[in-house]
Length: 242
Image (cartoon, rainbow, N blue to C red; front, top):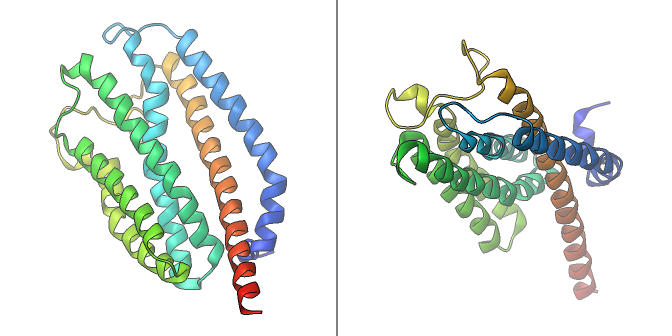
């Protein structure tokens, strides 16, 4: 079985219809369990107090804001190289979700930053690149809506996605590129000597899993909607020509 079989809209609809209830159920369990564990069963931090608990929303949403763009990039490259319509529609479907995750990360970061830094906003390298990433999300969505021909829209948005990937990369690694700024290093890192304390780390991992599953759920739902919309427009066009 080839992975490219799922680029067929019919195959994608069949497989996603089977997977969606399972992914949705796991997302609900992980999100509810992780947030309850994090907010109600972890202690206050000795420096940050109860403010530290916003980590269970801020870190997963920031991770998904970046990873959503990476997913869009992969889907856009597949469209450019192989011209599979499902990949273009999946990228389109992911954009509003990624934009919302970016907005949540910016908002919760401001709430977290104010008591820690004494300011709601600073032109920190990571914060600035994250704001630009949010603007790229807006531009991507607007470009899809501005062009009537879906293939032309997919081509142009794919190019925009390639350009915006620079800022997705900067959002992830800005702290490593510039040894300055208010934003701390990553809370979770495979090569870091120390992550956050285990009492915060384990519920954070559950919350991250919940956000990932939520993203997959929403992308599947929105991609299915985009496929149905494309089919409906095609039927309407045929009726007008008949």
